[in-house]
Length: 68
Image (cartoon, rainbow, N blue to C red; front, side):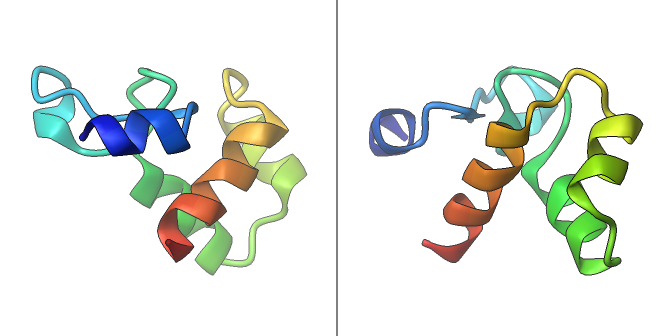
């Protein structure tokens, strides 16, 4: 888990939050939710409108996280 925190600064894993599901910056927005939105062909702008607390860098790091 420490390796994730060092390599991915915007992805957090906290067993006390969302049962340890990887989330974006401690928000209750799971990485899987963002990946699903991308898989549904949503654009970055659409995702950012749906989740105003997100930043473009969050989406980019989500893609890097899921491809590693």
